[in-house]
Length: 111
Length: 120
Image 1 (cartoon, rainbow over the protein chains, first blue to last red):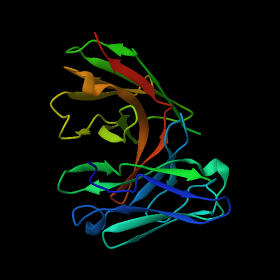
Image 2 (image 1 turned 90 degrees about the vertical axis):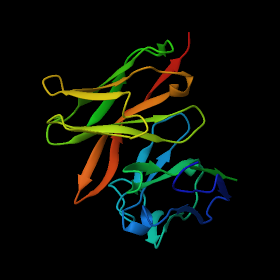
Image 3 (image 1 turned 60 degrees about the horizontal axis):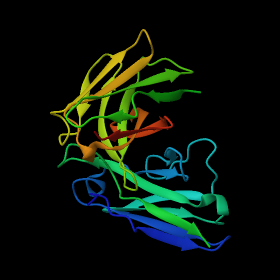
């Protein structure tokens, strides 16, 4: 069971907006540690999607956005495209565990 | 741009030591932190540990007794050793650069990953 909780799956039709939540606690997200998001396309390695809660690396479309509030964070994807079908992971640091942690991952299906 | 490539045996016997190497190309290993992360088949990601180019390390407490990460700056490589492996250590092992900015940390970029199966 992951320290950061994500829904196992979300889905949406092309062009729609979806959000993926990442719920933590007072020892990780709630303690002020940044949340970062990764996209893992089928059969490939994870790729950094959002860093520092809401920043996009160069080359990541502005359809992807991140936010953080309290003990939770969210990844929003607008204008869904078939190529967005992937697993998405959040990541932060946990001070109780003294190590970096990932959410369990969310599988996005584009209908 | 920086690229990472894992290499090592794809099959390890139970109780033996898993050994992997990550080769960094397109940039120097110096002045950065480097990490290992694993993903059991069909499951999520687990941070294993990191090493600074100078050799200082930090490991996941749950694996600390079995893990050693080392660096060879002359070869632009860093390595992972995991001892006394069991079937539970079967996973895709990724190496990644560990970005440290004002205490906030993330992983970018990642290697393509290598599947290591523990089986007799």
